[in-house]
Image (cartoon, rainbow over all chains, first blue to last red; front, side, top):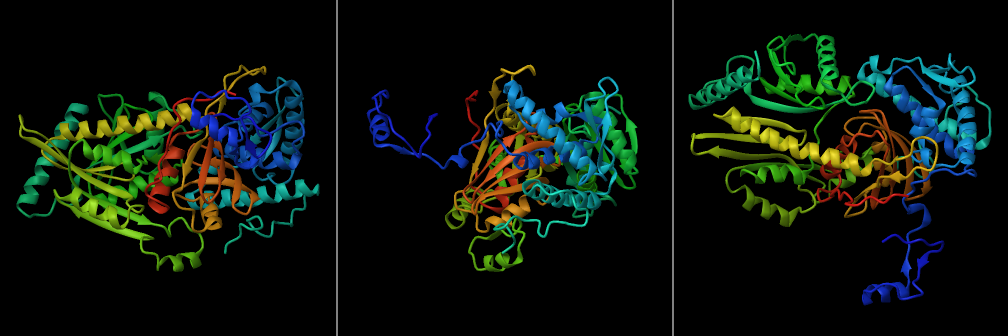
Length: 185
Length: 374
């Protein structure tokens, strides 16, 4: 049953359910799961910080790298990352486009410089296109696996430095592949 | 060569196998029982194949692998040979390829596994346990194999040691015979959550023509056949493929989170996340998360993990089979899967199958019947 609530319990104040048991239970109050465990259809709004979007956009870059086809526009990347792109208002789209442009440029110049670069669209020179330069499907299976594992490390490093608002330092890798608490026992 | 000739050759092979078996003789060199594989195929960029693409994809792969490729009078049927190994590739369905072979099983497995490893846009079929049992139930049950191993999806060696003392952490069992169902009900008493079927065996017969087939279906969609009727065998394969394809398409229809808009705002969001609940909490949450996003087979998922709480993570992920995007919410009690708009249902089937084989065999996928638009 869809329940809209801003608290930790849903309580029915008027008897709108015909079923007496259900009505009784709702009148007592139904405990709701923690907010972060509720299915998250919408993953961004105009207050979502850049570092929170960094992981999602990085994952989309990896998905495009594996696809290995031509060049991708920023818009294509946004549509792939945010399934609700077509449902968003103009302000949110503008906000996400601006952040994504920064992230993609930063990645192509730094963490993903061996994998991708920015190209200009001939029909629209101001619209950046991302072009992948690594033939990942041409690698043998174990090399390809190592490439993807390296991309995991780069992704964590990128999210960390974006969160800390640090510039890229080529020699500084992430200490561990795993976030605190998720390291091997 | 066309489909009819192929069917004649494979039926004759079934008869010959029976003769060798009756005489207790070895098969001719390089030959073995009839086997049929289901291979799920996409374009290298992860998109769907049409008939022309499928043929070009197969020919490209075969030539890369040093196979000799022969076209047939049927546009969607190809013969591949390499040394003593030969395959018939039937691409009538451009997404679900049916592959028949009479070659030695070890050689065939090596080559099919090699295809799936080298070309990530190919994958096995991953039938869940209940689908395998349902296919078995259409015929006369003749046996089964259970292969459950909780150590497989744990990246850390220490918990693996601790599992040795657990009664049902590793359960392997193979039984053949008409009393299979009776044995199974006994097993259910001892290891109800470890009955991950890795093989089901069953027979179909047609008394009017005195024809029969005994098929073994394994957890990666491979059939091994004995009997005297290729026709009955292909009917069994077709029934399985119909059920499996429906399962995959239903996942895609219901669970791809996509917008109905036209790119200008105001669209409706459609699709529901899928939830796989674990009947008992994961033994080693962090070990499982690590293995889940290790990029390795069999799960083949790339992911970046955001730890919300010690026992709750959100993952931005990529399925390395079709390179589609997905997101996962994971706790020791469940995984919630948000498929991207172009995602492949195989991602969910693969995850479900491996959870049944390595976490709890009673895990089931309940596909929501009605989607909620937001």
